[in-house]
Length: 215
Ligand code: SF4
Image (tube, rainbow, N blue to C red):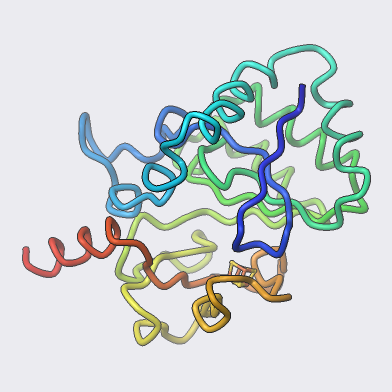
């Protein structure tokens, strides 16, 4: 059964998600060490630790593998005009990526935003190119930095330590000016917006930034 989640930030826009880290091979810098951006991941703290929040994400990890998942997802998105893949987790396997591409193709009325680190694995390049070629899909490769470093032409999003670190070439996420909500902004879905800068939030992420500064 399709299990959809809704995060408070996104104006009621819905997501399909998996368990963070368990499904994030792109989060590994070296054995046992996470990339900086994933060290402070919001999806490993707060509400995300509750069993009722974990349960749909764990269920989704097996659910996508069944016959009929693509058509059920298409049916579930009948009334969505915007959709976010993964408020937690990532597109951890090629089989899932290929099914997601089908869902994207079969829902042209809906704008899809896919943030991912799977671009690090060459076998995903064709499916990611095919997704990005669709007019209704914004694929954003996430930078691993928490200090605004990104590669032009590759990354579509990066964390900045605070809003002052926002530099030329980035579009600043201003949810912090609107009580942490998008409030009508849809920049993440806009293919013309090349790089979004997200100011770091949450105690865990601030701690990561402090440790990096001190190093
Ligand atoms: S950039 Fe806009 S759409 Fe993206 S998360 Fe921030 S407020 Fe929401």
